[in-house]
Image (tube, rainbow, N blue to C red; front, top):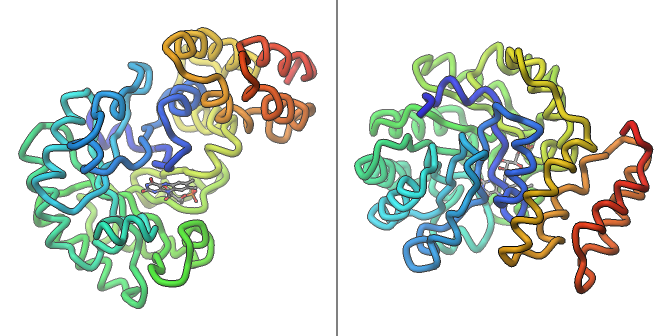
Length: 328
Ligand SMILES: Cc1cc2nc3c(=O)[nH]c(=O)nc-3n(C[C@H](O)[C@H](O)[C@H](O)COP(=O)(O)O)c2cc1C
């Protein structure tokens, strides 16, 4: 297994309903070196549900991290073990999600005020396999927004043995803001994340939140070990090829054109469809591929209007491609 610190320079954020296995397969074509994260899966869903289905991924997705939500150390450890057995390269604990559903389950961002619980989860999870366990967190919650609060949280986890943190550089407001608002209303404080790295130079610190350009990535990487990109990677996925070319020393990789990406997706889609997946469940992740290019709207519209129709097959994708100028 490749060590975490060498493969965390760029990662793609866990995003519920977005970064499912089909999305990750697609993003891997554009970002061969990025670390990919699953959507959050609750420990309860894994330990009481259809773990085999929930954990499926394609071998090309490596390095791929499983994000878990939960706060019961034993259940989190059982879930982590299942993830390790399935072949995930990292297990990540969600301490950043502010949704009501997650709060009523007493996990996600509200766990920032219970660092001992997170530390217990971390220890139990680390004891069941050799797969690294990491934490994704915010810089604070509600009125606990001081740097000292964040530092204390990190220090307790550090003492428990955790050496890698992904920090979304915003506080989470648990009452009064929706999850969506919680990704844009609280201001970004990159300085807090930089300060953590200065204070804990031995920790691997990955900065997340609001990154949309290669220039921003390069600038953050002067201070922190890695960046995690969420919405920009989903809405403008071709941006990842530029990052890949700038950040990684490739001798034999050349970014595929957008058309080539689709050509590469077709055998995957055919395989998945013959196993029962509906076309629309894969193509919905491809809508942003031509963002900013001539024909982008026709591409999106054709896919949106046709992939859900009964009997829709790969020809819908071919038709959508035919609506684009050849060089896109
Ligand atoms: C649709 C959506 C779903 C998300 N789901 C999760 C999740 O399951 N777990 C998590 O830790 N963060 C989740 N996030 C937050 C992202 O991982 C990330 O922290 C946030 O979007 C900020 O990064 P960005 O500005 O690059 O998008 C989600 C974000 C979006 C947009």
